[in-house]
Amino acid sequence: MFSSRWIKYGLMIFSLFFFVTYVLELDAYARIGGSRSFGSRGSRSYSTPASPQSSPASPSRQMGAAPSAPAAAPQSGGFLRGMAGGLVGGMIGGMLFRSLGFAGDGTTGGGGIGLFEILLMAGILYGIWWYIKRRRQASEATAGSYYSTAAGQASQPSSYAPSYGGGPAESGIDDGIGHIRQMDSAFDEQKFKEQCLDSFFQIQGAWANRSMSSVRNMFTDEMYRIIQADADELRRKKQINRLDNIAVRKVEITEVWQEAGNDFITVRFYANLLDYTVDETTGTVLSGSKTDPVKFEEFWTFTRPVGSNPWQLSAINQLS
Image (cartoon, rainbow, N blue to C red; front, side, top):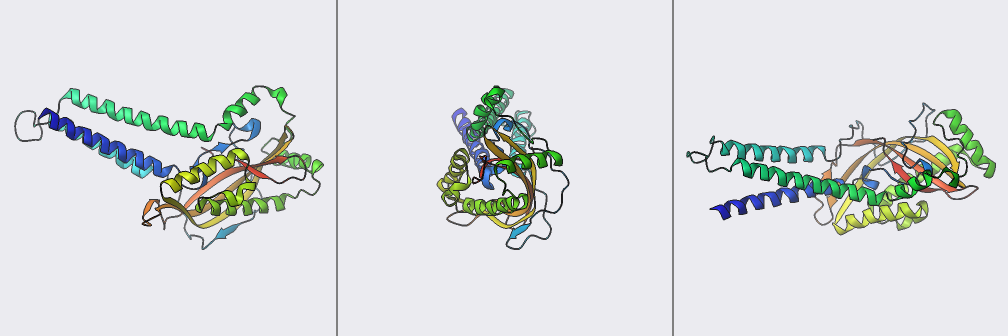
């Protein structure tokens, strides 16, 4: 009796653990970068990208037909995690109910479990939650290992050349562009934004193919390593992240500065798209939606050695 009961609870806990872990893993690789902040912005790696200023219309382009009524982007995994939480709460509540004698076979205690078992179950579930949380934190720390280097450098300001044009205001952007033109007289702001838009679509296309080799020259070494590792993980799981009907509504420069002999420009992309992950073998949708578009804004930072050199993506940031 005792053994069968604990075998049942053990199987239940294992199933719950597998379910929650599986749900969280599905969220990890939606859209390039998994909707997380990572990469290097030099000494500004720890700072939030500057808020966009009102500006004239920027280049806009879409891949496929743009959805007519984009919906607000849901929080990653909100529904599934809520459902998991509801199942856990209902399970614990049901056990408590039975342990108090409100259900069961009609005898006192109802065949349920006692307070000790409930507390033990709660402890195990907390352990599962803690384990998953630590796993995600470790993953983000690995993906953002650049921060430790940036932080060490930031603590020694003398190791950086002066930073110019760092303010988010329009005058700061103009000053920063002016400093860039001192070493690259041909730099054109509008052409740069168009180039960023081209890079955005090419990188998203490579991500959907789970191979970043075709756009390797568009990344810094650190960014390529992180994103290709994410793509390899999708391939290992036999999953494909589909990005359809991409429509970029606005591209705008929010920060321009120089440090340590490098130019940095942060660009804000405001876009909507269909973002969903499918099973490679069956085509079954595992997360996201084929019909409900999501809106998002991301800040992409590009860098290069000062002068007329190719730009490379060095960071992707979310506002929160």
